[in-house]
Image (tube, rainbow, N blue to C red; front, side, top):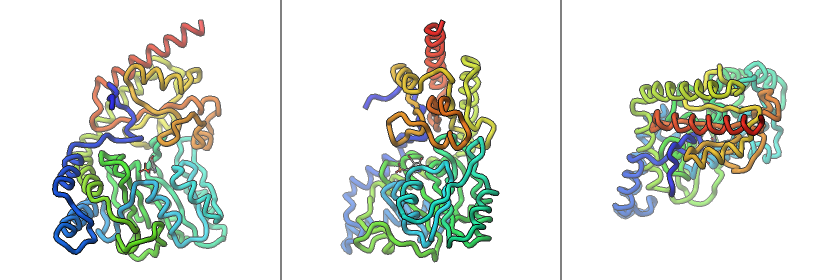
Length: 377
Ligand code: PLP
């Protein structure tokens, strides 16, 4: 696959890290067999899975038994939403379709939780929605937005939910491996993660489910994952995910500091070249790697293509999944004008991002803005 010269789309996918690649190769070279088999080949595979589970539990602050391996973040979210013992949903406007769509498809009432101009969910509105009767609710609040990077008030939501006997699902697909995250401290009932967002392979993830919570399984079949998720486990993928998480969290504070400096340089440069640029959630507590912005006169799809031609990979709109131009509904919920919202571009950095990547991004940006100004003259 041709590699971009500057990869700045880490919220869509964090490239496979070397530790994950090695861990997966080891599993394949070993020829791991079905982990449910009683023979030695099967038991070797079982040991690999349990070692990965143990390591991830230590890194994520949960018990090993609380981890259910899945085929990615979408499945983990679906499992939580469709299997939770609740009568209704309160879903923040910023949630990913992997949460929003199964909630809406459930046939149960769904209340959308308002967000402020920075995309941060409103705890007072949550209190209000929970105070209205209607049965036990599942509150769905992501850890950090994949679009704006805004960190959500998850602990506060948990406190409010507890007072009303509600459950909380935290989609931490954009938090795990990037920020400090501890399941026990957070206090949520369920937490979803996905390996390919922190340097592991695609199609592997996990749902962490608080011990004692009775969750209906989504996938029925064999008795794997203590009867909570049927299907022969993806042994290499799980080993790769555990190795990637360990690597991602090694020295994460240093990585975070470095990424913050690069992101600040990028934002300073963006605005110096085009002062009309709007950076969404600019002043909000947000992930240090994400910049979501729009220029009032620059078409997002054209910009995306121009960046691509210059070897810079970024995203337009909310599309880490659609590949087509849409107005991000989260920006509308944040009160952003529709015309500006449809011009949104997202840049997301990672631990391998360099100063050269930022320089290349800014030189492409400068050329695009100059072209646009010349054409308008
Ligand atoms: N939730 C969030 C916040 C995401 O950003 C994504 C990724 O696109 C998902 C869920 C879906 O995860 P996956 O790609 O592993 O299915």
